[in-house]
Image (cartoon, rainbow, N blue to C red; front, top):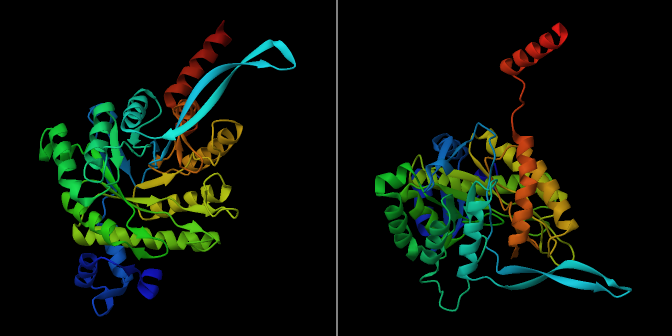
Length: 404
């Protein structure tokens, strides 16, 4: 109803033309596109056209992931693109009141993230048992990195340091051909890349509320023609760019994601799209994202259920804390968020490793702590170990004990 009655503002001419050709109502004032009203029939056709199963390939075939919208099998991934890297050093401190008492305590030092840090984080991800896929957690800010070479450096660095699936967004559309060439070489050819897509892309084409951004929408259109997996993601903030009520923000994010999915299927029917949701609660003191708030987890759980209703693989968010450093607050916020959202069954749970301070900081130490926590979480996600074979073994042991 939101898409057909209210519609969505679109600042991209190619998208507007595609929507109009598919039967949407496009209104204009001169050369400016004001509004696109998408009939519900067109949205539902797009949902039917989108694949239920999506393969995320990897350089190591053993790390290949299969996402199915009708199966709540959860994979854990890193996430975001933080500007701050948090170094940790352990130093000896002497108790002022008891000079003979010494303690080893951490000292945290924030700094700008660099390409070498991204390489380190990818190599770290390769070693973490519970991490199933890699999303670049560091924004590379070296002095010789600019928009003209950032994407190739970012994707090469990730592919070169982990054999797990690599997912990221594009900084500029102009670099897509270079990134695709790199991935094609790594996969062993064009057809090999389609069968084993080593990389996938995140597109945040909708700026809440209900606006399709020009450049990111153009990126989605190009990616759909390449045929690689793409996340259609939206991140409204309850209280500022979305209604504060739970029903309001969930209705809005659903409309925003479905508009992107509809466009993807109009451009290239059968495009492997992932239902992406990053809804957050606004902090009332500074209007930043409150990832650690319980409301944010509730919103993500709602979105997981919507994606399952549409039989689409879901890219969800959890395991994020508002604490600036590892500690008790980060542990509590992360564990509550990760447990609740993971048990709701998203196929691709991102932001789960090393992120602090509302997704602005990456800490390798926190990532290692998270890995330990997620080993416990994955135990909850395992199916029950009660089956015919187990029952027969138990029965045999009981019989042998009674006989003895």
